[in-house]
Amino acid sequence: MHIPDGFIDVPTSAAFVGLSAVGIGAALKGARTQLDDKTAPLAGLTAVFIFAVQMLNFPVVAGTSGHLIGAALAAVLVGPWAATLALTVVLLMQAFLFADGGLTALGLSVFNMSIISVWVGYGTFLLIRKILPKNKSSIAIAASIAAAVSVPAAAFGFWVQYVIGATGTFSDSAVFTSMIGVHILIGIGEAIITGLTVTAVLASRSDLVFGWKNNKNKEVLEIKNV
View 1 (cartoon, one colour):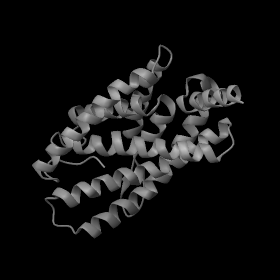
View 2 (cartoon, helix red, strand yellow):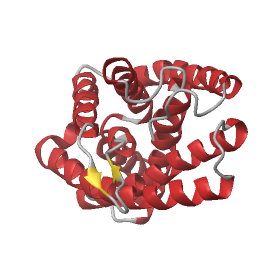
View 3 (tube, rainbow, N blue to C red):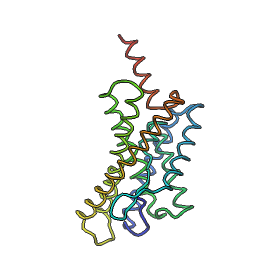
View 4 (cartoon, rainbow, N blue to C red):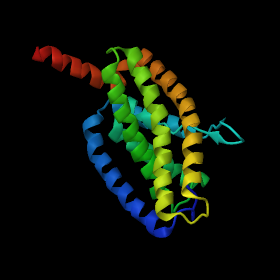
């Protein structure tokens, strides 16, 4: 998922730098409404956790491996705006310190993992949360499903970028089949890790979990409106 230098042409890479910059700018403004003195430290810890876990790879199939993206996890824990910022910081550190993904491709990777994956994941979480009962177990289940969806969503974003400006010779259909197929499997691993992590945080400090607090606040408003 971390795109190397030269894999996508310069004009496309530059365009996505601009799109990512717009998304990050919006996240900086939006995070102010989602973070407070209690949750701001959690956002930092979430970024550190994702950075550490992304360094651990698990086998998928045919010699390939995957690792946690953490987009849906971060969105549920600290809100989607703060999650976008947390993932962006992680990707910047990985690119500059560990050469994990090319510097010229940073805009592409940030757009896929910090924006597409976060917001598709959070949108899925909200949808599933409405269907399920309003309890903590449902929050963990919704987070797991959101995580499973968010990974192939990021892979789809890469495929669109490949179609627009690929420098390689692989066919669009071959890249689509390979990327989406493998990342569906990676999404299963991500779902398990996300569900376990959200469950653990809910058990210890549910008052800090954005997805749970937001759910409780809506319940209170509904009761008041009755």
